[in-house]
Amino acid sequence: MSLIKKHYQTNSSSNAPSWMSSPPTTPFKRTNIKYKRKVFNHSQPYIHTLKEIPLYASFRKASYTIEATVILPLFITLMIFGMFTFRLLQVQSGVQKSINFASRTMAVTLGNVANSGESDKDVDTSEEDPTITGELSEAALMASTVALAGVEIVKNDVPIEFVDGGPIGFNFLSSSVEGNYIDLRVSYQMTFPIGLLGNYSFDVDQRARCRKWVGYDNAENTTDARYVFITDKGERYHTNYNCTYLNPSVHRLPKDEIDEARNKSGAIYYPCEKCKKTKALGFYFITDYGTAYHMDVNCKEIKHNIKKVLLEEVEDKMAPCSKCSAGH
Image (cartoon, rainbow, N blue to C red; front, top):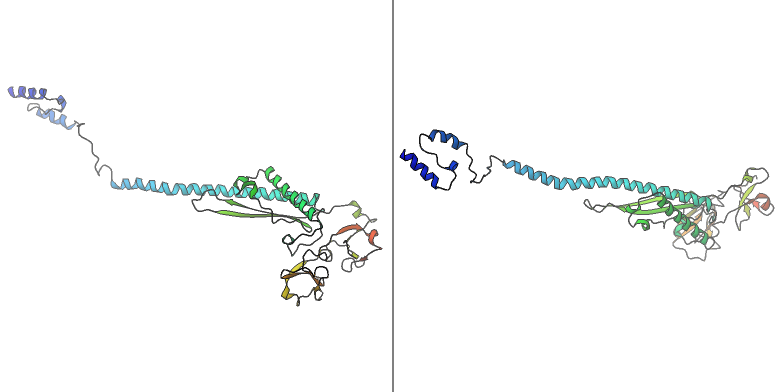
């Protein structure tokens, strides 16, 4: 009994809780051993071992982070690229609809204002200096057509914010209203908004080409009235508007090839009397059935201001064209 009493006196004098005290000696030893195995010591830090968290698990978490860092931006970029493609098609569709409407409308309403009757089949006359006659009317027609195209682009809700430069990013400088056609051309650029895969820009060129409408008269279908076509200084009248003498096919030919050139009738070419004093720029202009080569594509011998008149007005003054009016 003295040993048990001494043991309890020692435990009561310590600051440790009673349940953390050393177990008494027998007869309580067997019971306290079972109780001691269930006790968790909160005063000692809990340390994870490699057996509790395997090493490969930490590498797996790191790989997930790397994959998310690389794949997620790439996925977002591809998604935006797909949406940008649809925007590109939307802009193209809206612009094409607008320029088609503008060219057709102006061809009907003002197409005959600047009609010089020149065929632009083989030569782009927009690169040459315009003639004095009709210069103002052609400029007005061009300005009106471009302005109408711009109005239609706004009315059709074209997302021009995706076009580089916005409204001023549309370039109509390649358009032409000379000759018998209104040739409306527009070019612009669209840039991909995200530069993760590089700075990609798309150059877009669109075109709308309509033939000028010169009008319609019910008298054309009557037997009492017949119409023919003449030029300002021509000596013959033509029954076919597409006669090669009215609308010649103009070709550009280098200077060193003019001596060997022949027209479709086999005749050689001579210098034009009206434009031979003009300085040529390394090439001449010829027609399929003409016999003169020209230094200036705007020569009056090439360009004709075509007029539509009643046959009875010119029948006594002019002879019929041997090519298109034979037998009339």
